[in-house]
Image (cartoon, rainbow over all chains, first blue to last red; front, top):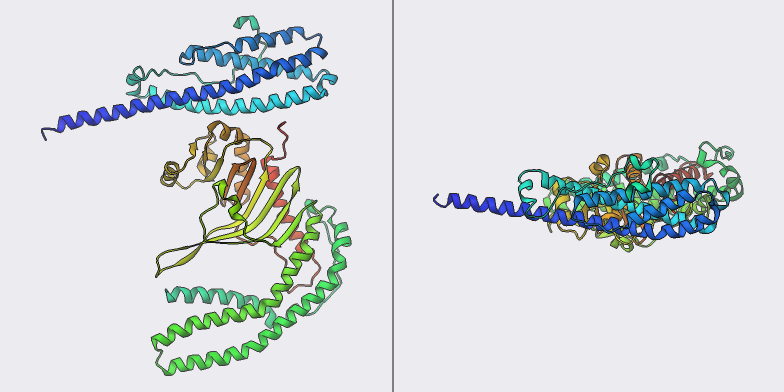
Length: 189
Length: 359
């Protein structure tokens, strides 16, 4: 019975340690998921110049759209600090904006029958769609990992241990409603 | 050996078989009455089959009808030969048992002996009937299946299930009994399916039981998506079993967003992103619908080596000929087989495996 207070202290410390380890594990998983998104975003980014090259041959009157996509791509490819939630949020928003810009480009392609039926363009679109599906899957995994991380941080005593684990609440990768409308590339530059 | 269980199980099996032989006793189906019916296209999937029937099946009707009658007469003759013999043997046997005061040792010998003898009789009588049914499957079913496209139907097949062992959803078993393999292509999706029954012997030396661990259809389908890892979808078996599986598996649990899907299935994968790439929200919805279409029975599947393997539990025996006691015209056989194939095709349609994702 004399040792009871010590036993209680040890048990609490052990539990706190496991909670701390859990937060670290979830933080690393969220970073792993973010890295997975970046791999797919890179693939998409590498596809875009090919698509723009083909599109330019046919879409002479869509220079503004094509230039806008190029600028969005440049911005989305900018390096960022993966441990800074604000930087991550901006990075994901830039990725969403690029996706939105490419969406408008693909819609515009429909108005050019020659371009629409061009074999190179068709192949590029198929590959692009496949990469978008991969991005969607990576986004779902990222959001699941971030949900677990944020829950562990925001639920007491996670909030006390988060600083020790260098873990911060991370943003979700959401479909941005605003990015579905016209995007002014200069707003991101 | 648990005598009562063996006795009761054997009796039930024999009574079922004898029940099936009752029409034979009364001479049902021995006469060919009436004219051959025309094939009527009652279902959407039968459209066009009437012409195929006239050309490929009707020419064989008379020949197989004769074979059917011959098979029935042979079986009936055997039945009427063996029944008196059996009746006399049983009478003497049980009378001797009665005279010995129902001696325990004698009982232990005579009861299972009776069951074994009855099973042997049923097997012997049914031989010609089974041979006729087998000929329908080997000669006529391929002609029916040909209507659907370039498909091959093979009734008797070797054990195949262990070829799919690496997919991770084949249950542990000691014995496999497979039949009725169909291979072909539907809307660009390669299909390879067969029926199987897997059993496992469980229990101690004194209490051995053979349990059916799976009975149904195994379908291998080519996928319209490329992937490198392994993702398996199993029936949800409750938190404890799922937790144990998670701890002892080299695959991670994947938690997805669809609550209905999560309630019905447990997903394991060695690649979290790839699992979500394969199990899109719409795919999850369609797999849940498919499960409901098969009566809520077990559906488990595995994505591995660019194929989707599905194991669908189905109690009834699929791809079987119609009643041997009815006049043979292949119409019921054709309707049944076409309906069952359509059910399989619905798997492809429901899961949209034919959708070109541009790979």
